[in-house]
Length: 346
Image (spheres, rainbow, N blue to C red):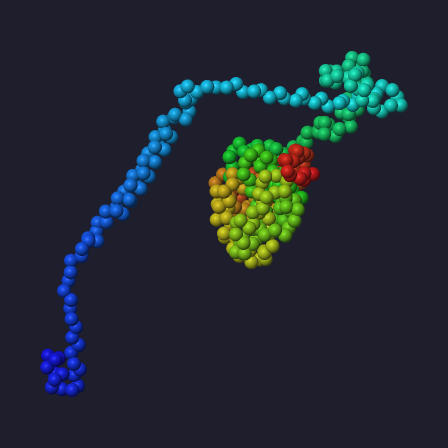
């Protein structure tokens, strides 16, 4: 039609004709390729054979048995050097001589004589031992403190938490910052026992976290509540024990307290990560600690003196739903030796 129309009307362009060549059968088939397939099959077979050989030798146990006809040669014993005996410094019996010469110390004193006391010097040694015991303050037996309101010391409070398997320990300090030492000492005692302990400082002045970090410039719970930091930013290690601590923080307290409803969620997360979470609340009341109480919670009342203020605070806690409140005092507590690599808080 286009060819006929192009002859009659000039507006139609001539038809573009093309020559179609006839199809030809290829001389060699494109698939399958015998050479590549044979090579791939050989490589796969070698790989499977190597894996099978390794697994067979691994599970056969032949490497643990000596080969047949193996000969064992004697190992030459290396002579060890003689142990060096340190020279002992002997005390001279002369009045004007402080130490005896090395020759006299080596000939007159032996190791056996150094370990066993001499009968002739029994009286001077007894007098010297008496003077040393009197001069050492660590061996003086402290007088037991008399309990007036049924309070317990730091060691017994730590034993109670460990024995009961408590997950939270809430400390209320009606006497102020000085009584907050009970929470710190109990947390360290439980941490020294091998449990994972974290102390959460909710005091206004940071009385509980400052002795553990020697500073109040670390981010803490206020930064977490104000969404200025994450958990990893506010948890810090105690300088004097293996316990961890969340300080007060550096954020605006007013802004942080607007998100106080998040405290139960934070406490639940901390309880999941740690064996014991110790919370120092300062001079709080029963309503103030209600957000912090959960399953497995022990409530403690820190006290320094058995006065009316402590008695009234204990009565209010008992009347408001905490009949098992325990009074604990840090008075008379002697901290133990610091752990290796730690400084002594004393």
